[in-house]
Amino acid sequence: MASNKFVTLVTLVVVLLPTIAMATDYVVGGDSGWNTGVDYSAWAKDKMFHVGDALVFKYTNPPHNVFKVNGTGFNACVKPTENDQPPLTSGNDRIELKTPGNKWYICAAADHCKSGQRLVITVMDTAPASPPSSAVRGIIISGYQVFAAAVVGLFLAIAA
Image 1 (cartoon, rainbow, N blue to C red):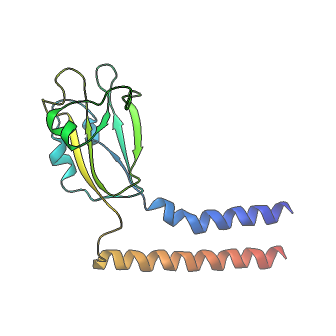
Image 2: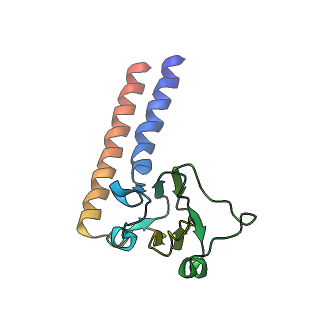
């Protein structure tokens, strides 16, 4: 009985791991984190954000924080009222990107937003059209899943 539970657990991990591993956590600002003096437009420009990815804001609080705002709030560096949305203040905030579209984030401490501590990204609904590298990646993942299914089948045959 215990071996069947183990085989089921291994099966789930092997089959689901490739799907889970495809999402990416992006540390905003890279090694610089969420601070003043970082060019967040330059940091984001070569990245492709997709639904399921996550932004991780690493910073010191005080003085920094993170507010999710709309385009108007982003352009004017105006935070929402705390009744609408409280700031993120943990210093290690992870925001999962759940929907496609533009996303705007600011630091509302002092003049941090006006001095450039703000980020705008576009989140894509699905992966971009399949370039050769994606096609190869898909074959590798499919091959991995076939191999994993064979290994699980072998375990089940041995366990029986």
